[in-house]
Amino acid sequence: MKKYIVTITRQFGSMGRPIARKMSEILGIEYYDRDIVDATAKKMNLPVSTVSDEEETAKNEFFNFLFPLGIESAERKDKIFQVQRSIITELAEKESCIVIGRCSDYILKDHPNLINVYIYASYEYRLERCVKDLNMQPELAAKMITDVDKAREKYHWKYAKYGCMDNKDIMINTELFGVEKTAEVLANIVKEKFYD
Image 1 (cartoon, helix red, strand yellow):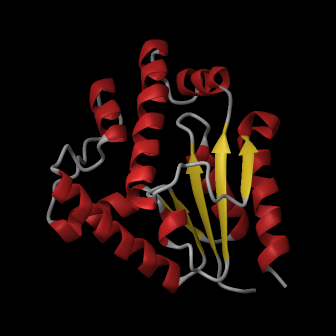
Image 2 (cartoon, one colour; image 1 turned 30 degrees about the horizontal axis):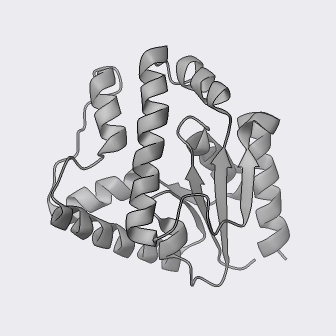
């Protein structure tokens, strides 16, 4: 088996994180998402909220989705991106893994064994998942779907110079199979490509 990387870019509410978690179980490799934010905060000596899910208000949750390290100046945002780039590159050099978001598809574009995935679903499906699986109020879920998708797209254009859906090897609609089966389908593609 070759050392490989899977990057996942996703629409909010398309269940990209649970899919990545399930893929990591199937493939026996790590997946990195919030740990990148935590490592960045540590390296930059910035605070990251450690409030438990029970104590987190919807407002804080919304804020953290949009601005995981707070609202900062353009210079600070650029510095955060550079630190995250360094962390993502180190993770990719160390081991096979799945990296979620943060322009990882762009950062790792020269990696020899890379599959870039885009996970999406209809607005209605995502709204339902946010309400049923993430226990969000419908109004907040609708706002987050719009605002978080817009923030992710803007971030991607700023640093990668292309949109979230561009330069992907695989695009998959979660609605087709649900979380478990989507993870299995993607894991099987990875095995076909990289496992001897």
